[in-house]
Image (tube, rainbow, N blue to C red):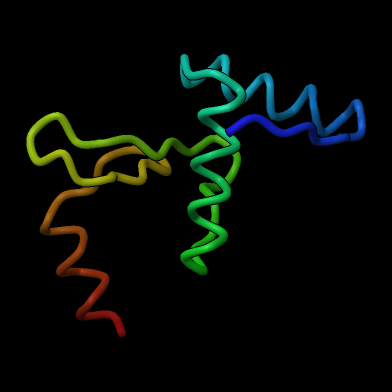
Length: 79
């Protein structure tokens, strides 16, 4: 379905940049963000990516470097 949305110029530039970085259309990005909002989930933070896993097809949030199970265990022990 087509609709018209009025966005401030700065927001439009930000959304366009995110869409280009992820190699998706602006419409696809807005659809993803709308889905997240309707599900009560937060959008990825700046510098992160949300994409389907090549192995499982499940959405994967990448926010930095990969961490090992040993690092996870150390953090769990510290709490």
